[in-house]
Length: 377
Length: 121
Image (cartoon, rainbow over all chains, first blue to last red; front, side):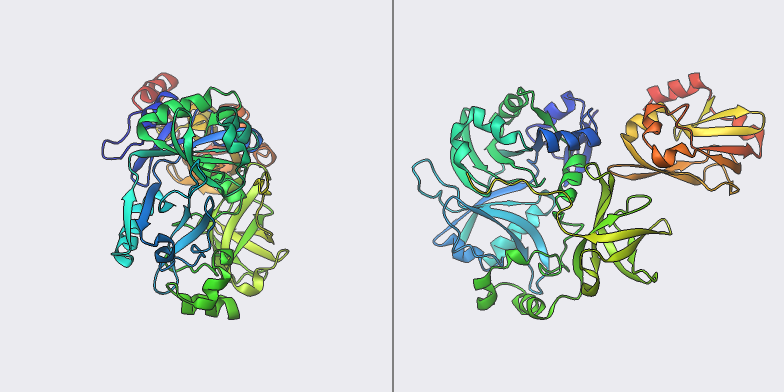
């Protein structure tokens, strides 16, 4: 299928088209929403074997400066000064009122000699990246230089067999645990590799030079345990894992406390209150937020999708679905939704209103499908 | 059997038309996980959204290819929505419609015309 000429491409776009992927516009790029295998089978393959994802649309950058970690703390609520070399941490850029500008991953890749890579390696969402780097540049002018790594592709390999696939090529990756990040040679090129992902599965995210992307991608796909997976299954996998998607579950009005992401507001930062929107966020931590993010399992009828209203048992509309769909593993509708905090306890019976019809739903614990991160090696 | 550009099919038996989505539509949608069929007794107009078919990723409207009264909905699709993928033009039918105007049926594409239309997509 031809793609729109106005869309950007990744180093892997031609390969996706050659594999028969259905290409759609996403974050300004032509991206594969599914391959001939289809969303359902791609999803299940990733849960059972290993799925390979092109996420080169995401923004990669290095922040360098005299003290990039302490500077970075001016725009995020996470403890980055305390981030150990070789570790990465999930966080979010915050606006002045404590709303989320974007969520991100930032880490200190370890070099083969055991010293930390210079600077902070940051990955942000593709649709937000230009604004994100402008915000960082504006807020941290004179403190950090932003080196956008537009000459690098990014791929994720996820699933219970992903680690064995990667380690067959790269034995040194075997002693990395969840959220470890390294800068090292591998696959015949130079990598920035972390043991992480956004499916709830074990796996790695691998940044490679753009010119090497097709070769590394196809090398991984030579392994019969690996299949290419599109954005459709990426979305259903992250939803089952209870992970929020920016622009749907998170936006500039949503605080980390409302979003259920308080783990990303570190204790020392709460005490210091020195991040954007700290007044609101510290208050919400103490008194509770105005709305709470919950996981809903739909007990009957159609899947509830983004925008569906949520009602209490008496029929009063009390909230809204921020993302929802069908869980191939649970074979049921699942959704993330905002509800009043009094209705957030697992077991609470609610209704989702789909095409005017109220359907039974229940608050369940997050995640819908257990995470399988490898926290110790 | 007759076809629409929205990829529905219609098969006429007397004045009752059985309606479903084509194999092409089912393939495009991917694995069907939920079908909402119209209520029996409801009157629909050609072009109205009268059913919904859902995949993992999205919900899609199905449009009534002809006007009339719904006289039967496929009861199997509630428990087995995957029938739409397995047998889109037979067991995966959505509803039976008592035809209001046979001219609407006559105006639809025959299979040769539909196949030719698919070649243009």
